Image (cartoon, rainbow, N blue to C red; front, side, top):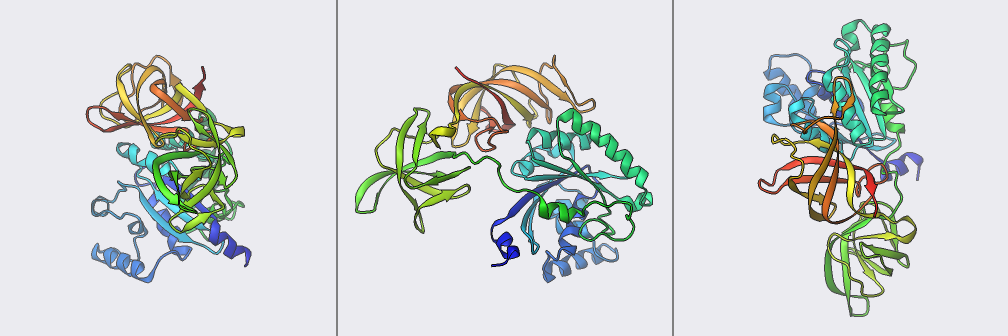
Length: 425
């Protein structure tokens, strides 16, 4: 099999786009899909008809991603729009995030599994408050790679000085947030220059196009440590008819193999993997993303919310930790108030013991004397749980390092959290 076919078979890049309203996010994705030949004939025809009904000429590229009727009527992105396409080199999953502050909840959701964050900046306006917010979310979610697409270069006469000024301004933002390895690309989503093809009007830029960056970026969760949260315990008959207890769930990271010695947390009980069962039969091994039933060689006390790992790369068992929070509720954070904390397959009672700081999006500095977090605020806090969590820091493992907080009374999701420091003992 050729290298290209191998890449298509197994290499998927998840990337997200974010930018202020009218920065051209939807147009950029439409251009990417169109020029990379990721659209079907009926999609092209439907957008051409909609464009004509509006009295416009040509094709409104933003319509390829503005999927909701309300979005098309208002000309803005409200929900996260997911699109899928492939090139000869790899497959892609795009999350086109809403840009307005009101939809930060959607933006965090769309970015939570991204390998790359593409942040758009309007060349006619430069770095905005929302650009800072999008960069802060990318930092908060520890997205491994950030690409800044300086769009609408056609509207500033393809001026190199404009691009370099924006690049210098964003360098300051990245330094304040601790974002490393940022790639900046000047482009025009409307005209197509530097999106898929280079064009001939940005000849002073010698770097890669946006598609070239996306085709060569590393993909996937960097952690290779086995993390298997147990979702359900079942009693079934496998193999020769003996009754076994099976532990059902999804491998969040790493690989589990028949014969492996694993540890069941939080009790720290060891057992050997006797079988790995799926609806399609048994497996010798299963890797991240696979839903399986694990059968152990002996009975151990394991319940929903417990976790299997290898002994040499164990997670932490904690009841107190520091976390970065994005506050998503209209009701502000209340220190000492009890919430439900959902972490993996486990839900426990929790409270915010201390609010350490709130991020000032203008200065990008933490405000250490903040009394609360309001709607769409980003901050850091210490959280204590009623029962032990089996966790990692978010930088170490996304699946076991993230959680949500839920209001006990309303069942609203009030915050998304990423564990930054674990307190042992």
